[in-house]
Image 1: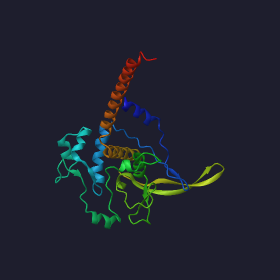
Image 2: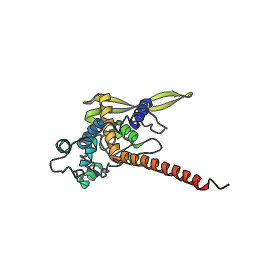
Image 3: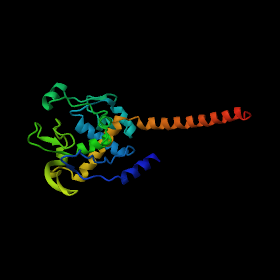
Image 4: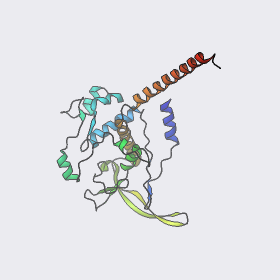
Length: 251
């Protein structure tokens, strides 16, 4: 029932265009994720291991927890674990923190709970990640050659540029309430290995997994909470019935 409700809600949501007013806050795109889509979560886990774990760690998550996504231990070992890593190990990066700080100016953060830590009044962390990973653009003034609309002057290079291609930020004018305002829009300058729709789906799978990883026991916690509410409701009903039985002769 909960899965159906979430799917209906996702269909009703409208994904906004990638356009930002220079004087306004960046509007986050809705992340079309489904925490009950195991195939999407599996693809996202594969993307995370291949593209994120090179620099970032997820040191509060173990590989064997991926069995919750429908993967067998053999599948995890053959497709998601490096030869010198055990299935029960934590998902740590092999990069030396000192080298990472020298290359990027700062040590890449742990990503275990990034989907939760990025939640704000602007939207859930999944929306932030989905928009962030799709809004890198070329910027010759930055040390890495890349910048980002959601996270200006970020030290991280665009790790997925070969898949997405190279975007540029273009300035334009837009009519708004009787005056012209400056807007910035992203345009694909050089295509990547994936078409824009394919890349968006790839990012959605990756964000779906990162959202799951930030709280893998969420469904169990929700189930326990529902059972607890049912038990409490029954106890309240019994207590009320007992109270009426004790006080029925009292006027």
